[in-house]
Image 1 (spheres, one colour):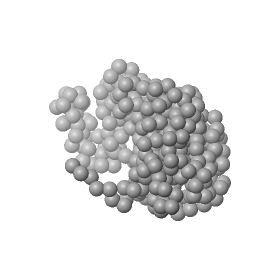
Image 2 (cartoon, rainbow, N blue to C red):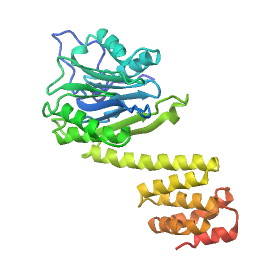
Image 3 (cartoon, one colour):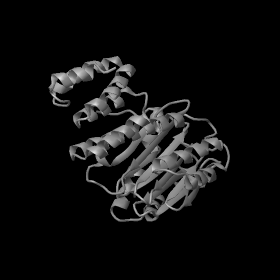
Image 4 (cartoon, rainbow, N blue to C red):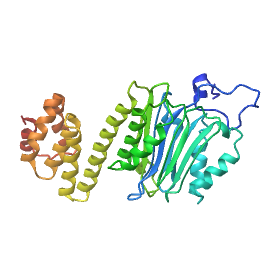
Length: 329
């Protein structure tokens, strides 16, 4: 099927070779601020970005477990993402990979790209014709970069925030983005944001290697929404850990993970309900009752589910136990 290129698609599909110098420069580039980083303790790799451009994460952010991460922006060429990862997967360092791609790009003067590999080697490039304020800062296991900013204090503020932040890689990158916005951010304002974090080593199953893969496509407050989604993802990651522990019959670890997940989302009925299920399935029916009751208060329709789960083998097939769970108040 033939696919037409609309003006909106030009936002992400600037050609690798720009027109001759006397031709007009493509409009509506992806101006943004971003960070690529690696956590030396876990090996996790990530990209986080915000921009006044629709769906910025779909073009800017690229990462692969055990390989590296790439942010490609300004007059964006999305091919820097997959090509950069291909080169790093083949054993090239991030600086070497970026240098090779820049050398072959006649549009290099309007590109801004950063890459980091699984060993923490990092490099960034800001083309001479990126729209001011534009620049980058490469630090230990990270790079921050920005263009069309309100002022030239944006990327230094990101670097300072990332270096001083505590927590996991996602949290530290979020703080870098928040510092950028607090310092002035994109001169045009805010629209979208994204975060992508992958594990330090590949499992051979890419869908299992993404710790965070979240995008806010269009919002008046994309960073606040991105932080909310990261919190949801943390809770779901903990619940998934709980499932894995329970499968291995490590009940103490499983229930601890579920309790932590529920604590992150205290007003979310779904998480409370499945915490109750985990408690009941490990013989802690009495402990499960107040948790089920909380879920029912938050969303009464959950009270209809325990008999269905019992029939599916997901709760004890004991009418008396199910009756107690359904009646929990």
